[in-house]
Amino acid sequence: MPDNQNLDNPVTKYPKISPPEQDQPEPGLDTKLEPQADHGEKTYMGNGRLEGRKALITGGDSGIGAAVAIAFAREGADVAIAYLPDEAEDARHVITQIEATGRIGIGLPGDLMEVGYRKQLVHDAADALGGLDILVNNAGKQIAIEKLEDLTDEQVLETFQVNILAMFTITREALKYLPDGASIINTTSIQAYEPAPVLLDYAATKAAINNFTKGLAEQLGPRGIRVNAVAPGPIWTPLQVSDGQPKEKLPKFGHNVPLGRAGQPAELASAYVFLASEESSYVLGETLNVNGGKPSP
Ligand code: NAD
Ligand code: MG
Image 1 (cartoon, protein in one colour):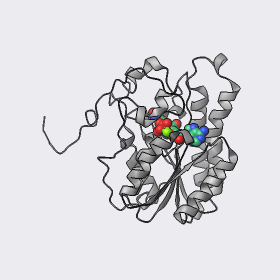
Image 2 (cartoon, protein in one colour):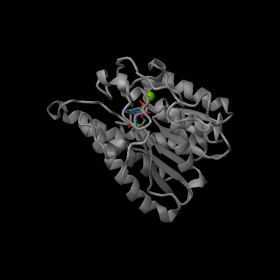
Image 3 (tube, rainbow, N blue to C red):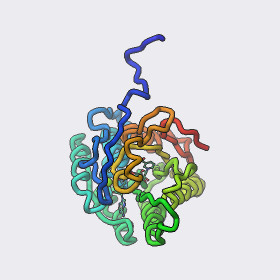
């Protein structure tokens, strides 16, 4: 086999983790995740690809959103992150990382179940940053339930509120600020096309997000506002340990993809940077799959 020391093999780039069974109350915290996840703190190198941009990221305190927030700041953007009040500790870590780049980092805690907060959040972000030209709808709720008989209408409603209905409200409000050339990126999931039997409500919201993304991209394209989605596969984040997966499945989390391991949040960041930046100027209504090799439609 030829050898190139400069080349990262994606199979071994990160360890194949076998997380111990663990359970956190919702929302889970990155600070308590075992093993700890990588958000690019030590690795992400910015290159001025988002110089002077102004971004709002929901769920930007932890997991994928945290990695995106850190990457955006290192690419030159000012960043507001939204999160639940209980996640202040994770949010502080991310804001510290943003500020270390010399960019503005703003925390906007609140509950996306509340329509008033969804709207206020957008105005507060635009106020604090002096405008808005990137919106990342990334917050998500995922609670695994074995049987439909045990899946309450209350949970279904909450999952739809947080995952997709909030996207409508926030994006509508953001259109008051987003200039021509702005970018909207929605976090969907491989669950949109490969629903797990224990994630019926969650997977249905992700299919809805894919559809919303494509339709809105057609609607806003003529204005020069691009809408795209990122569809992660199994990524090691607090979502998974706060009832997102049955506990006994955690030790094998992510082992069933062609790369044989779970992804780290840091491995998602460049997909969002690409879709936010002008490098993707002719890409609209696209779903960028970052899933370790699972076939996608
Ligand atoms: P995460 O727990 O770090 O992030 C989810 C965030 O959603 C939380 O930090 C929280 O701030 C926010 N949130 C949840 N309920 C909320 C509410 N009621 N009000 C306000 N904010 C709320 O986990 P993550 O895995 O990084 O999730 C980010 C996105 O990635 C989600 O949309 C999730 O569905 C998606 N996703 C994750 C995976 C994975 O394997 N981790 C796979 C596919 C898609
Ligand atoms: Mg969080």
